[in-house]
Image 1 (cartoon, rainbow, N blue to C red):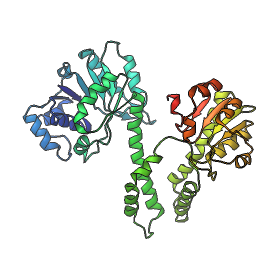
Image 2 (image 1 turned 90 degrees about the vertical axis):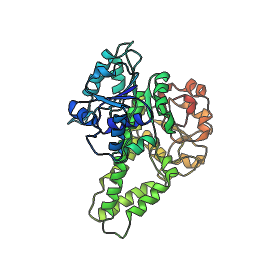
Image 3 (image 1 turned 135 degrees about the horizontal axis):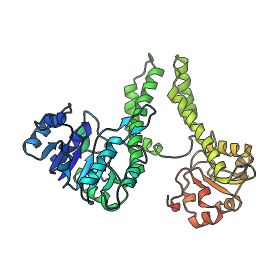
Length: 408
C-alpha cells in the first residue's frame, strides 16, 4: 500500500498510474476534491485520466480520503501539494513542512516520505534536519509530467530522479519504478531539487529563445518550424553543450550570437535574451577572477597556473579564447600567470604576457592556485596527490570537470 497526499494535476495522475502498476493507493485531499475523486470524476481534464480513475475507484485499487490518519500504515507516501511563489521570488514550503510534521507523528520510523513538490535548493535537507533521528526517511522525487501528456509521460519517463541521503531509501523508491524501463538517478537532495528547477527553466529558455528568433526574423522568408526541427534532430550535438564549463569562445559562437542580436536590432527589436547570453559569458570570467582573489587573499604578487589556453580541447585555436581573456585580467590585477596547453605552441602563449610551462608538473611548482579550463585528457592523468602536494585543495579550481581523479 502506498499513499499520495495532494490530488491535483501531479498527485492524481501519480495515484492513478500507481494503481495501474498494481499498487493499492490511498489519496488524501480536501473534501471538495475527495467527493469528485471517489465518484471517478477528476477535478480537472487530463487525457485518459477519467477512464483510468473511474476503473480503479470501481476496483477499489484507489481510495480517496480526507483523513491523514488513513495513511499511517503505509510504507511509502508521496507529497504532491503545491509550493507558493512569493513576491520576492522565493518559494513558500510551509504546506510541505506541515504535512511532513503530521506524518512524523502518525507513521512508523520506517516510512519513506517522497516529496514531489517543487522545492528550493536545500529545503529537503532543512526539513530532514528538523525530524527526530528515529523519524521517517525523506527523499526527493521530482516530477517531470507535462499537462496534456501526463499519463504518457509517467509510463515513458525521460528521467527518474531520486534525491536520498541513504542508498536503501533510494533502492526502496527505485523499485517502484522498475517496470518503466528507466534507470533512476540517485543523487543528493540538493542536486535533485536543482535538477527539477533547471529542467523547468531550460524549457522556459527554449521557448523564449525561439520567441526571440520569431521577433528577430518577423516578416522574413524563413520557417522557424523547419529550423526547430533541424535543431531537435541533432540531440547528440546539443547534449555536448548542456554541461557545466567555462565561457564559450572560438570563431563561431561569439560572432553568431552578436550577429543575431544585430539582426534583431536592425529590425527594431532589442533581443535581450541574446544580449544576455553574451553578458553571462563575460560574467563567468569576471566571477572566476573574483573567486580566485578571494581564495588566495588577493591577486597582486600571486602565481596562478592555468591549464588549457585554447578555447577548447583538443585544439590549438586561441581565437576569442576565454582562457586568454582570463589570463589578461589576472595579469592586469598584478598576478603572475603560468600557462600550460599541450596543443598550443609556446611562442603563441608568450605573446599574451604569460609565462609558459613545458609540463604540468612544472606549472605546479610555481603556482599558489590552479585553474583547469579545458577538458583535456592529459589533465586527467595527473595523480591527485601530485596536485595536492603542490597546491591546497581549496585553491584548485576545476572549472570544466577535467580532473575526475579529484573525486568531486
